[in-house]
Amino acid sequence: MAKYAKRDEYRVGIYYLGQRGGSPAWYRCWTECTTPKRVSLNTTDFEEAKRLLNEWFVLNVRPENAPLGDVKLSDVLLTYYDAHASKLPSKGSQKTYYNVWRAFFGEDTVAQATKPQRQAAFRASLLARMKPSSAGRVVTFGKAALNRSYKLGELAALPYVQGIADGPGQPKKGRRLTLPEMKALFEAARGMEPHITRYLCLLLGTSARSGALFDLRWSQVELTTGIIDMNPPGRVPTKKRRAVIRACPYLLERLRAWHRQDGGEGFLIRYHGKPVASMKTAWHRLRDSAGLRNDELGDVTAYSFRHTTAWWCRSQGVSKWEVDALLAHSKGTTDIYADADPTYMQASRRAVEKLFQQVVKLPMAERRTTPTCQKLASGRGGRDRDRTCDPSRVKRMLSR
Image (cartoon, rainbow, N blue to C red; front, side, top):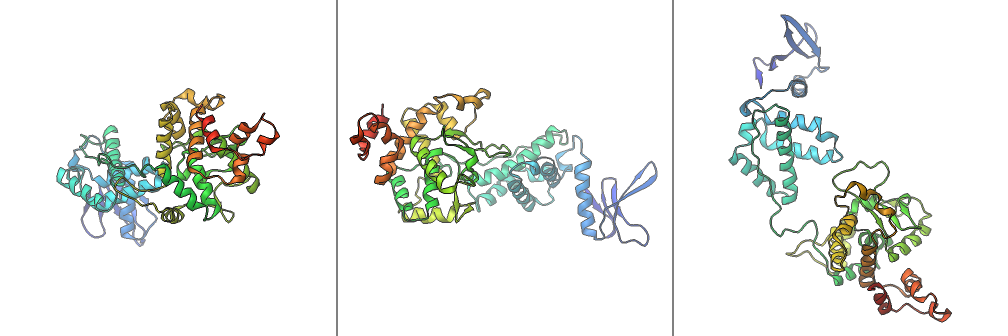
């Protein structure tokens, strides 16, 4: 698309770089009805002027039904990034994907870059340095850019770009945990900083992703009803939806205790009074202390709690709709009012409460004060109210 004549001449279409006599500044120049026109690029650097002319041309002069051999892939990628991807909440990742495509294909045309052999080499280079899921997102960026350009009528045809599948049986982010493994994590957390136990309780009790838990503030928690809105005010919605859940009795009791400790303000997960942005280092220490290892079934990650809780709920007979609501999977328009229902997430709350009782070894003091124990003791006289709650009685009540 761009041509060289001399070192001081650079042309893109009908536009070229020029200078006025005695001035080192570069201009975007063109001729309109035999009249020379120019607009300053506000730079005296020739390479910078070339870059600015290219970017302006890509954003302002669109090709129409151009053959694939006449359009540079870099122009298609840049237009897509500036017009769409840079405005997404994931713009940081989108910029990375753009840079990966540009670094590999350079100044290739769309026709050159989409040849099967060239695409196969690109996929191989991605898989050599990243997981299939990450490589797939990089490829999807380029496919989206080409698809947008074709729909806008810029390309005469839509080239085929093969994606990267996760592969059969590949675990998603973290494998499911067994009950003994979850018990081991909670036991190991008792000897570590308090915010780690809080983190584990919230992972199990909300089935939320770590990012949502790090954003969670006390203003999003309603201690009377147990409703937790995982969406902070002003959050831009993304494909990673966040649920509105109702805490089970055990988690609600812990929330009330934490609320008193924190004074009811700020973030729920914090370390020495400051919000936590990552738990990677702490998670590795916790996992090693619990004696858990990654294996052929997948990695042991915080995301494993999300898989485990979903599996447990289904094993306890919780409906698919309710599990979808717990995990914030897609939902219909009327479902936004679901939390007003007194029975909202009732089955999943019972299942998660039962899971807490299975994996968390409660201290004696906590056993006397959990809501389940209070319910069992109520109405049976003062002698029962002072007794330690029998776990077998808890299980019988929860199974009803």
